[in-house]
Image 1 (cartoon, rainbow, N blue to C red):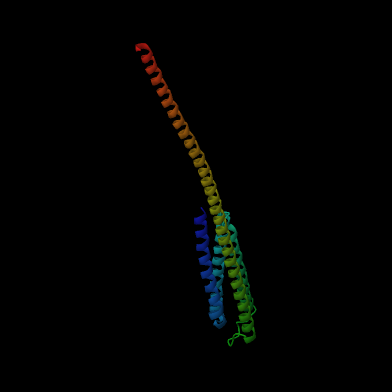
Image 2 (spheres, rainbow, N blue to C red; image 1 turned 30 degrees about the vertical axis):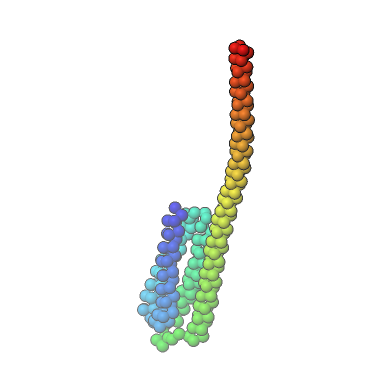
Length: 216
């Protein structure tokens, strides 16, 4: 169902975000200050988390395919944002792996290169800005969807009000016709009563005349 698919997507997205934050923390806080075998072990751990993050993205993709058509565009947009963030993260990990394989950590006095650190910080700032822009776009899409739903609902309510007004107008017209019919029937009843009284009076006069003529 739509609810289950959306919930499955949100669960996978939460797992992805947690893994992404953990990978970023390891890259910034531990990898630059780890050397030798410890660095290799740390890179392996990061790679495992990268694999898990990819699995979360795959889960989100399946949930998008199963989602109800009404929410699928919104979920697809979120998925593309996560995929963009994941691609940038993978490139950063690959750069660290290349540096490690090239012997960048073989020097016992290995320290983070200030120039490289500045570049990484700038790149990280750009990626955070890009992610913020994507989140803003997602919010805009969600707001637009809500606005469209409200507009649709208002249109539906307007149609109901118009139909109700038409029904009231029709009812008023029917009541007017009924009132005129009742008035007509009332006038005919009064006329019939008058005629009946006239006929009765005439019959009484005729009978009186007959009795008078017979016994006079």
